[in-house]
Image (cartoon, rainbow, N blue to C red):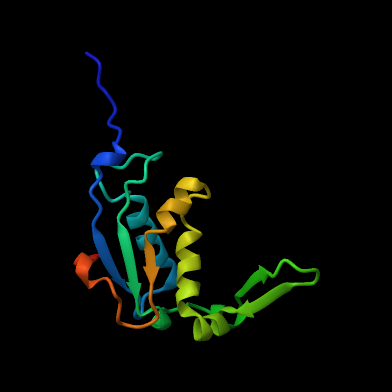
Length: 145
């Protein structure tokens, strides 16, 4: 008797919408929960080479918590593409000016670095405040947040 491995069919995947509240939650813990939902690892139909994940909405990104001295000591870098164009900003400054980008960068960093990972990252929406425009999709609050 031969047992067959299950492989998800991309046409048969059902995607749900989840809301994660970042208020008072450590950034790393929030990012791992969101990355798990985006990848689809919480589903019994998870297949590594197929995008089986759900849509994720993160609200209250401006109230995410960074532990230790990360607000002061952690540095984010980006390059403008021009000579001498390396820019640096502390985590505290990024959280103050662009909290949604800080959270999105942490979550996308936990996704695969491939075309499939970019596709998973497109299902992520991060908002600094409480409001989001996705009420029509009837997102459910993730119970383990």
